[in-house]
Length: 256
Ligand SMILES: Cc1ncc(C[n+]2csc(CCOP(=O)(O)OP(=O)(O)O)c2C)c(N)n1
Image (cartoon, rainbow, N blue to C red):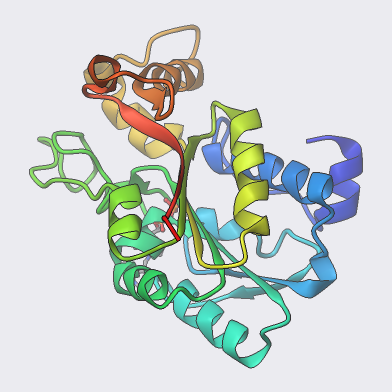
């Protein structure tokens, strides 16, 4: 992160592991905020518990609410109801937003609560030891599924769209410029906006799945970034054959 951005928006050094995708998201978010002139004094950031929840709180020089695991969207809804003039932005992990807190996500989408939700999806519960999450792909190894996850994973874009979210996006951290532009679009959107941010957890998910998924290269982190590039395809450019077995990225606006 540039010196200028750090001085302007960040209070203290972050605790993220080397190669953590949440750090890449944080950098993209602050670039987006600076580019669009997001008013940090008129914005409240809400997060639950987990490594992803640490992105805004205690780091951002803004009002931040660090709340119970799984309840970030519920608190954010309360803030928006009480102070509708504030921008309310939720930044938290996939465990927080889509697993223990999944019910709040679908109802906020259904109600079209005008808040912005960024789900930092690293496919596991990173902070507490790499347990299986509702977004862990079937067959992948975690500390609680050492022989492979027997369950299907949520497709968070399909879930949020199905629940009625008028703006849904998905971007991987390896595509930092696309991610930054998407963050600007989400923050400018005047209704409920949801982004599935494909983050990376080298420490928990990466080490456990290195052999299975072939994270090759000079380092594990390099291998994971290359893997993101390979599996993600732009929803607007890909033909039906290119989409097979891939993760679609881009933006989905509901027909109004
Ligand atoms: C009610 C409750 N259940 C469980 C926990 C323990 N806990 C803290 S963070 C966390 C998982 C975090 O995973 P995620 O939200 O995906 O964030 P990450 O650390 O991967 O960024 C769990 C299970 C808790 N703090 N509170």
